[in-house]
Length: 603
Image (cartoon, rainbow, N blue to C red):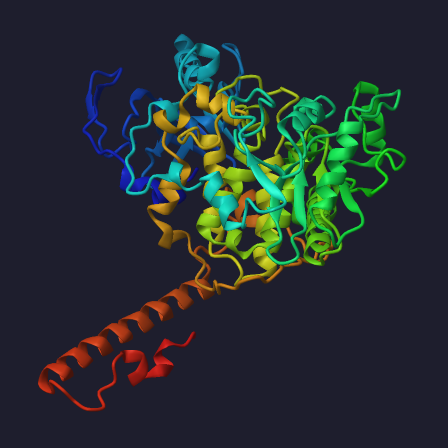
């Protein structure tokens, strides 16, 4: 990532130890100013290269490779270019050209990144000069392939907040008013024996015994039984999540599963039907029967109604994002921009995810029905739908800490396969399990924040930093596929949480327009006319497209807020000075707000 954005969020934690190395020309170089380092980050090598900048042409520079990042500093007097790329962002490293290649800058390395950019470095052809750089980059960008630890396990950063304490499932369910007469907390999965991809603590119907849960698990893909995600504070309808039923081609039935769904429906006496939202296109759901999966049929589940939401699978999303990258990097072709964007179908997919979440939220908010959500395995599209619906319904999740809890709960603890979808430290860039499902969710959140600019406590930078560290491997937050794997690796003991970084510097990530509201449901408009490409994320590497940072309106508003605070402070000082002169004035105002009430109002 470009240094401007990096320095915003990690300069306070960098170690400026003096690093001295003897370069190949025998000169001692003091690298203190050359490369920033985190505690636990060590310099591996440095080399003079030509960076083939897609915007400004070839730039001579020196590249430094540590066990965490690739850092390039321009050596040209007329260019202040700096590249700062966490190695976790690298998806593929290829050799460019051969020993006999002709043409200027035709020999070197081509690096594909996961964050919508590519890097190309040219090196001298003599003496296989790229070999050591290729081997070192490959070794540290893909540590798992070389029996090395991910950098998160080496990171020694210290913050004044411990992000691992942000999410406590018992406290979060208690905030929702659980347990109650209809729902109980069960520890049946304490050792991950019921379902190895679910969290240890689950909320299930009070009337369902642990033996009932075990029998239901046999009929749900990966044993991911229906469990509660959220309960409406007033009408008591719920959002429940799970995986597909194992119906198969023969149309198998399971009386325990059918009864369990009825028990879920009966937790609210006001509703006659349970609404099931299957995230998949109906064709895919039918096709899944061939591999033992399927969906809930009307004849087996009499008190439920089923709707398909037509959201495509991980492979379709992966190909769609590839097309987005093709049109935004390195060049944006203005003349065919709209047709090119349409051909990626990316915004179409965003629209379908948002539309599905709106349906879930509306059904629950209206009190018409409780909702059960699933896709195939219940860890991709299901997480998108439940978390977005909860964001629409519950204003708590729109605060900084609330959003962190939402991600920790619905994505991390419920087993979204981050390791497989992102490929942390893994060199197999063609792995069919890779997919931008979490990126798509964050994009949907950004679309909502654009339509409701005062509803979210966090700003755009907050979302971008979450995505940057989704790939960086600097923190333990997004590592591994499920809670049981994280416990085995002692992630909370051995790594730092991303929330530690964000919560130690909250002011930087606050939306100055935020107005706290209780019980306001947000219904974004999910039509193509109201959705737009997130330019500040997808096209941020292009200096010609880059929007003004920071937003001038936001900047001015923050200045006004600071001015207001300054006036209030001065008013308090004047009041104190005045009260010192007049010890007991009979009608002295007790606070600045009483003296000048209009000072406290919003600009």
